[in-house]
Structure formats: C-alpha cells, structure tokens
Amino acid sequence: MLIVNHILGHAEAPQFIDRQRDSIAILSADAGRRRIRVRSEQGVDVGIDLPRQSWLYDGAVLHDDGERILVVVRPPEPVMVIDLAHLTMQAVFRIGHALGNRHSPSQLHGNEIIVPVTDTPELASRPVLALGLAGLVLRFEERPFAAEAPPTCAGAAHEHHHHHDHG
Image (cartoon, rainbow, N blue to C red; front, side, top):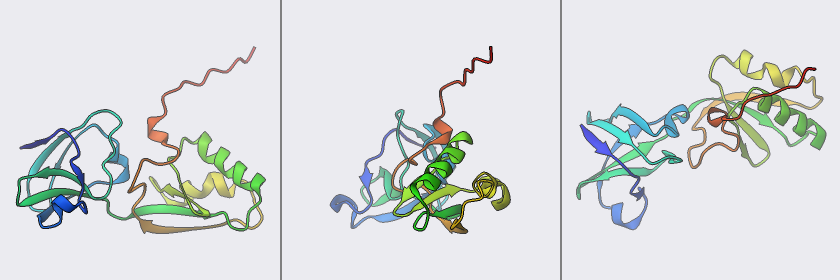
C-alpha cells in the first residue's frame, strides 16, 4: 500500500506537466477526511493520512515517483442549485437560515447556492420549498461539489452543541 502524508501541489504546476497520471476519485463527503483508504484508477492501493484541515481538491497531487503522479479527481455528484438572481435579500437570508438549520454543506457560486444531494432531491429541496418564496428557482444537476476548496458552510464540520434554556 502506498501511504500519502501530504499534498504535493496542483497537477497543473510546472514540475508535474510532463508526468503520466493516475487518478483517485474523491467525492465531496470524503474530501475533508484526514484518513481514507482508496484504490486508484490503475489499481494502486492508497492509504491517505493527511494533516488536520486538509482538503482533497480537484487536481491535488498526492504522490510523484518522477514518472507518474497520483492526482485527485473530483467527479460530478448530485447537487441542488438554488438560483438567487431574482430573490430579495430577505429571501436569500431565509434560505441560508433553512440550510443552516439542517447543517447542510453549501457553496456560494456567483448567484447560486449549491448543496449536495445526500438523500433524494425531494428531501434536499423540502426545507427551501417550505419557505414558499416567490421567484424561487431551483434545479438538480450533476457537478463536482466543493472541488477547489471546502464548502462555505461545512455541515460535516459541525462541532458546537445546541443549548437551549427552556425554563
């Protein structure tokens, strides 16, 4: 097994341009994991053991033997895309609150909020549709999620506890 302890850089960096490539497909749910065992496209068994706060971004080089590099590829996955172009600031705030209450990882990209669909499109859209917002446009598609950096709101990294005074 090949053990990887750090990211060497981006596959498009000058020192890697002439290398052959082997790839490892990493979905967004696994991109922030410190430790993971995967198999490359060419069958190499790889144990990844990265420092805390590492992110397996698209194009990350995990190994270089001088001839071939091992590169992270972030494949398309199901996402919900919420178009913000025709919504009021109040509506956008309410959407953010609804997604935050569910601790949904999300990514702001231009005038869109992108949310991974981890169950079904119906369940993913329920908290947003329940708001009954005029002008709401959402769609479902396949695209890499948080491929360059961790999501804006990383629901998986939720570390605080809810304490409510009900007395």
